[in-house]
Image 1 (cartoon, rainbow, N blue to C red):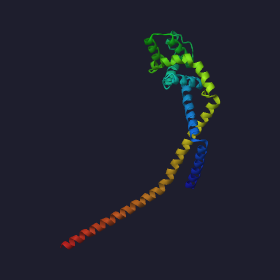
Image 2 (image 1 turned 120 degrees about the vertical axis):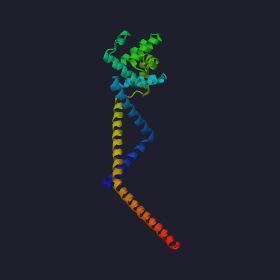
Image 3 (image 1 turned 180 degrees about the vertical axis):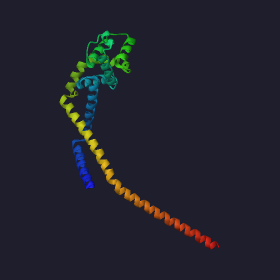
Image 4 (image 1 turned 135 degrees about the horizontal axis):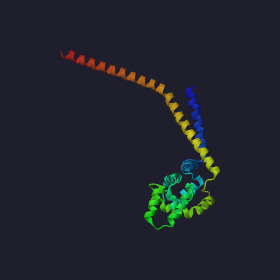
Length: 231
């Protein structure tokens, strides 16, 4: 019964694979990539308090400026912490926003108005963390280009809407469920194989033992025969 159940599930998975093939491997790959992207954006949004739409624009702006968008995650989290703790440096440089997104844009404006590289490096380190100094030019670009970039991305269809984001979340959950089910299927397959495989190995070991005993017996007979002939 266990093997029969595994067989039916194998057939079901085969049907799923055929369905995916019908959609097109390229399209499926892009959809999965989109789902993974939304998952990461959700995590960053939860840490920083910045909306997913704004995060998309911020990330794109930094990438097109030649910066490293991966640094944005740590910088936003660090800035959000500074806001929560009421870091006095924020008020000293004119940041009045109470959220990380608004504070980041105001920080970019402050950077663009200053020619003191040493002071900007110090502020970036204190408000954005260890990698903050590498983001100074990117933060300045954000304050200047965010609005235009958001409009451009929206017109090009690059800005994910709420409906697309929700669909990607559902796909991500389905992929996670499929992954668990597949792992469970393989575990059950392995469990169903353990018994028969153990029996086969036991038989093989017995055959090997018998063969070894026969060889040892023949070797002993030959030795005895040689001793008798030598007498």
